Image (cartoon, rainbow, N blue to C red; front, side, top):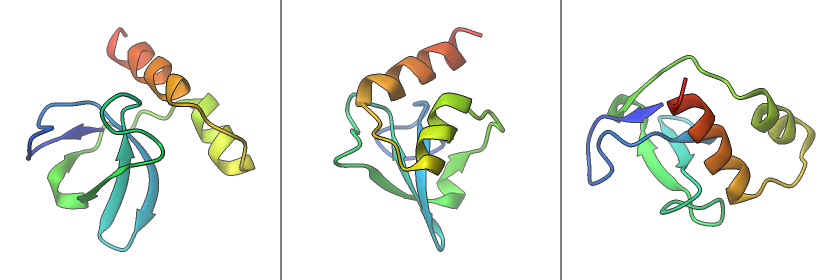
Length: 79
């Protein structure tokens, strides 16, 4: 997904958690897994892209590295 507003406008992110009207998003660089950005759903552009590796790790409760996030976003952006 992409941010539609704020300082991170136009940036690509991965959603790691959803809480009511808020998403917790990371990019692996400025917004790490330890400090995700809390953003309202209306301020993001949904892309319908799901990285299977990240999805599996989240569902299984496996450890995810910021490098995994960066790699997944790079793969998406380069397609």
